[in-house]
Length: 520
Image (cartoon, rainbow, N blue to C red; front, side, top):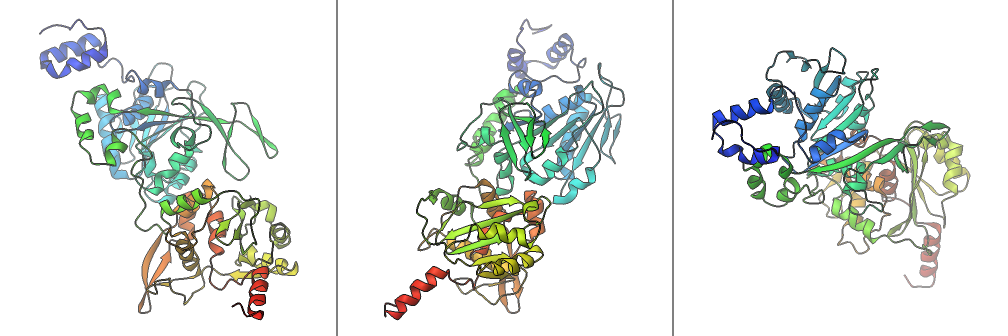
């Protein structure tokens, strides 16, 4: 074969590539004008993702769909100030090599600062750059504060914490009217619970249980409410949040697969994905976000147990006596005051209000007293504002129980093998024991997604306490970094399991009556 093949469809040309000689390939490159355009998206999902008007697009699912090429290609052709993140710096090497391959040179690359000086593109300003960044530790996002970019991309986004992504997205901005601003996320399904925030972030597309599912490529609009929580709105029109009008931002998800990548279709990569064992085959080949979801080995509360507890929950008209209340108070800021109301094994829907509503002890007490019934004891975090709330709640006649999470304890787990580093570890482990499906009366938790996230984020380690092995929780500040907020709802639920909590008034009265009558 010589000269240029008389084939108009580029997809058909790619099918022929394995059988072309070097001479034929060179002739084909010349005929197609290879090198005249830095990059252009492949027909299909990649073009769809490049052309979507969404402010935030998640492109991916399966492996080999051209995810990284999309990020690089947009930076090279449509943007002026771009940055592509990987979780670890060592993972940027592949991106460096791919940029150099597309450009045909490493000229303009500062390897120390990982910044490319890009060639000019018609319609865009001079001095274009592409930066490569990494945020290995949860708080490393702070290194990039005050550095705006019109394209922010996250390669393998499920490897990042939610807080890292949300904080870095805040620097999506530009002073140029010539260029659009957008965030591109690329990645495969998460392989552990830490990456599950991506499923929540794109729940209309990825969560099969979402009440209002979205089609691939469909735009949905969101605002952040006064509590910093995402709220979906009908369209792009400004909405009132508190006293301020806020402009919604759009999101979408566009799935890709190796079948969409012409360059990999001819390499046998699809056969490689077919040979993977489950659940990796379903994750990497099919982009199945529900397959193979597994817990961190040090996760305190197994994901399956939490989901089972939420699946057991049903609303009740008759709730029975309230047996305990967990109160996690907050004063202003982004933290919230959470109240968990427990009726033996069944929890009512959690009460959660902005910290500004409970700015002092009296306001916290006024909120709490509205939700306590049957003489139920109230376990309250007594540090900070909690101490004031404790006193004022007592003044209103509530049965209060002070919880100092950092205080030591001599309690053991139900097997008698482990001690606890402090009260915080104890109450979460007691919650774990209550969640155990083999328990006599496993608890039922409301299907609250934030509560699920709080509980699934908890981690522990085994330490030595004296001559005994002890359970120690990951510090709360680390959990805060992981979630992007304080685990207020999780803490409120866990406090209802603290050792030493007195019985509810009505329960104590009934037991006293039974003892008086000789029944117990």
